[in-house]
Image (cartoon, rainbow, N blue to C red):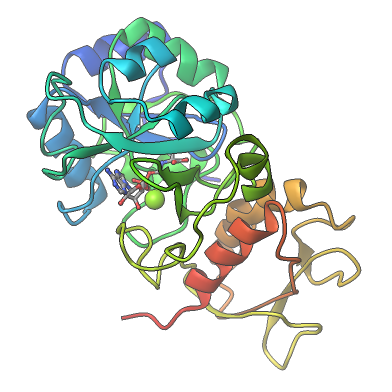
Amino acid sequence: MVSPKLNRFTSPAHAAKVLQDGQVVAFPTETVYGLGADARSDKAVARIYEAKDRPSFNPLIIHVADVAMAETLADFTPAARGLTPLWPGPLSMVLPLRSDAGLSTLALAGQPSVAIRIPAHPMAQALLQAFGGPLAAPSANPSGRISPTTADHVEHLSGRIAGVLDGGPATVGLESTILDLRDRPRLLRAGGVALEDIETLVGPIDISTDAAPIAPGMLASHYAPQGAVRLNATSAGPGETLLGFGDIAGDLTLSATGDLTEAAANLFARLHELDTLGVAQIAVAPIPNHGLGRAINDRLRRAAAPRS
Ligand code: TXA
Ligand code: MG
C-alpha cells in the first residue's frame, strides 16, 4: 500500500471532537469500516452523501453506544426486545421511529422508520461513548463498490473526509444483518449474524424479501470488484483467477479449511486484493449456503450481477 495520505486519528476522543464539529470520520466496526457523522445534523449527514457519492434516497444505519440510547430513537417491538442479547454486534434493527428522536430527516431519507445498530468493536464503542450521541454511518466504500475492512481500504476518501480511526482489520468482515422488526420479523439483508442464531431467539423469520431491492444496498449489482465474477466454479477457466474455499484451493482462498466465519472475514479483503492485482476475470468456488454462508453468497451474487 502507498503511504497513507488520509489523516489517522490518534484517539477516539479526538475523532469524537471532530464529529461534534459536524465533520465526517471513518471508523472501524467489527463488520466493515463506517463513514460516520452526527445523526442529528442534516448538514453533517449531507457531508456523508457528498463523500460517498451516494444517491441521497438511501436511509443510513444509526449507530448508538447502548440500548438506552437506542430507546430514545425507536419504539421497541417484542421481537426487537427478544434480539437485544445479540447487541452489541453485527445486527441492525429497523424499528418505528420515535417522534422525539431528533434525528436528521436526511439520515432517515424521510422514512418513519430507523435502522439501529450497536457495534461491538471497542474503538467504535469508545467513539460513540466519547461522542455521546447517535452516529449515522454507511459503509465507507464508494456507492456500488466493495466495502472496506481495513483503514487502508478507506484511503480513497483522502481529501473528502476529516480522517480515519484505524482499528485494524474488521473481524466479522460482512455488513450487519438487517431485520425489519416493525411487524412480522423480515430479513432485509443477510449479514454478520447468522439467520439460525436469530431464529433461535425469536422464531421463524420471513426471508422472502431478502435480496429483493427494497433497501438500496440491496440493489442487484453491488459490492462489485472491477473484474467480472463467475460463481460456483470448481476450477479456473482460461484467463480466470480462482478464489478458492475449502478443498478447492484456488489462486487465493477465502478459507483453506472451509471455515465460513474465516471466509466472511476475508471476503472483501480478497476482492480488494483482486482489484489491486488488476484481475479481469474472477471465478469463485462454491460456498455452502448456511450460517454466514448465506450472507457470503448474497454478496457474491451481487458482485456477479450484471452491471448497469
Ligand atoms: O455493518 C453495517 O451495517 C455497516 C457498518 C458501518 O455499520 N453499515 C452499512 O451501512 O452497511 P450501509 O449504508 O452501507 O447499508 C445500510 C443498509 C442500506 O441498504 C439501507 O438502505 C438500509 O440499510 N436501511 C437503512 N435504514 C433503513 C430503514 N429505515 N429501512 C430499511 N432499510 C434501511
Ligand atoms: Mg454499504
